[in-house]
Length: 196
Image 1 (cartoon, rainbow, N blue to C red):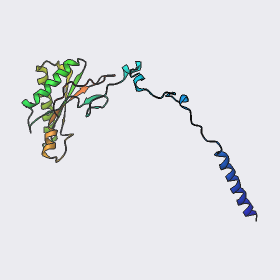
Image 2: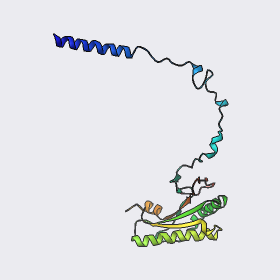
Image 3: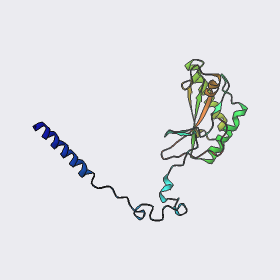
Image 4: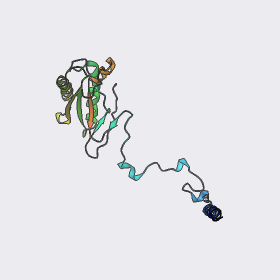
């Protein structure tokens, strides 16, 4: 009998607590109590400029990556034939776009990153990647870019797709033109985008 009365007391006590906790419901605010106010939001009267907006970063074009130090993909890559470091005539317009970008953005500098496909030894590919990057650098200097605004780096076949298809290997034989960032620097969009 004691057990039944204990269980019954526990059930009654639990019910009382549950009913007491649910006694009041939240009251919905009236429209004049909301952020929008009684007339709602009128898109024509919304201020789209903000005094604090001047410090905001500009949105980068699709496919452009800002890693904090470099801006990848803002300028198109220059592609090369197998085992070659000579710049193909079809790729020169991309370098003309890079010259224009640097003239329009005198505070920007470039990292010219040479790449190779997976074939060949690591040492050979590092050397070939360097020759490609140096060739692009020489071309840009002859086109009027100051040498101190250009830095080269060879990645050889470090980023190449091993046993890649012909199309993948074509993509691996390139020099990337990455925009270098300074502290507080933001990317200035390229005005003309060449292929790739």
